Length: 212
Image (cartoon, rainbow, N blue to C red; front, top):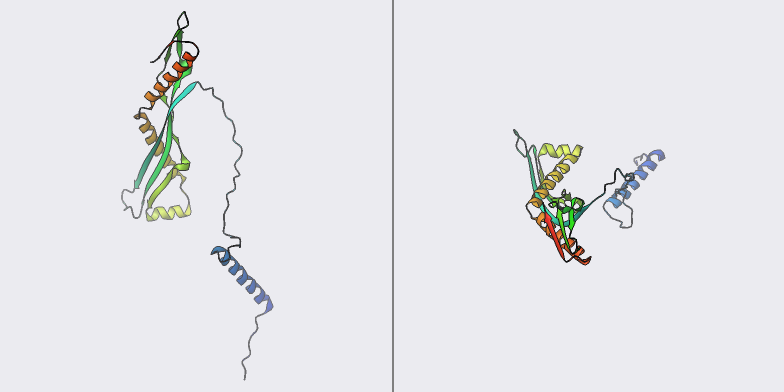
């Protein structure tokens, strides 16, 4: 005697078939089985930022006479006091690039001209260094080691404070490197050449530039 087969009701088979089709569609898109099929897991970035707001306007009288480009490797290691680094700790190698400008404030210049208007003497303040500017587009993390607890914490919530700390350390290192690089001396030399060329083109034969 043949065994009676139980038929699956239509209200069960239809949703089941639809679910199988959807699963196959998602798998094909996810693993690129059909190149022309759109990927439902794809992401896109939408910029919903508001417009920039002008907060202030400042008149500038400085002459940017030299600029230095720097690269620094930041090795930041956060160690726990009582736990091994395999459990709690974070070490990051960060390559940072940035620049520092050296400028002379021409707004504080003192000028004296001879009676025959053939000689001029300019007294300027010494060149100064501007604040280091980090080039975030060309700065990147080379390697990062995290302890188990740090990895778990990063999985549940990001920590933008780590990146901010890396940027702060990098900016301080670049600023310190610029201080000992001789940029200010180069800026004064370039400023002197610029002013002498400018005033001699106006008819002055002798142009003296001094810094105090």
